[in-house]
Image (cartoon, rainbow, N blue to C red; front, side, top):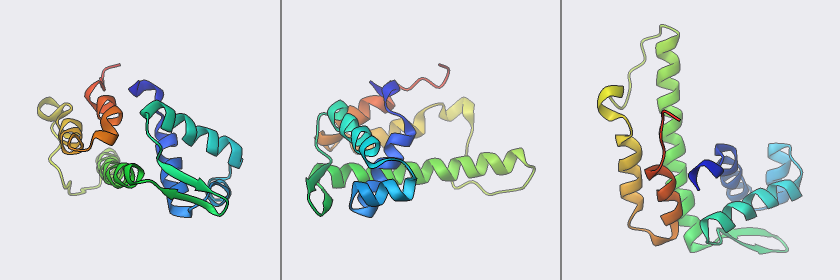
Length: 138
């Protein structure tokens, strides 16, 4: 299942939550609102949980959605920091990493730690499986 969840889908889901509507999010993302709605609906079907309550005025995150989105924000922020650090290393800049990155030691330890912290929430079990099965060599 993890290979079928695209990073862009997760980002789009966050934008829908921030905007409070598919229409607002579609304008911000510059994609058609029906395509955005379908993308989020497919994610919900894959996860087996409704992330949003839909109503005529927009959307509101469900309890499971709130928890999922909070964890997702943390994960994407950590990913962004890691990418910025790696980018700075490639350009020769000396950026300080908030996390010591030693590929031989950490391998997937970061993702395992994130998944472990999320394990307490049954509503994101499918998302945990995504991280547990991730193989960086594939």
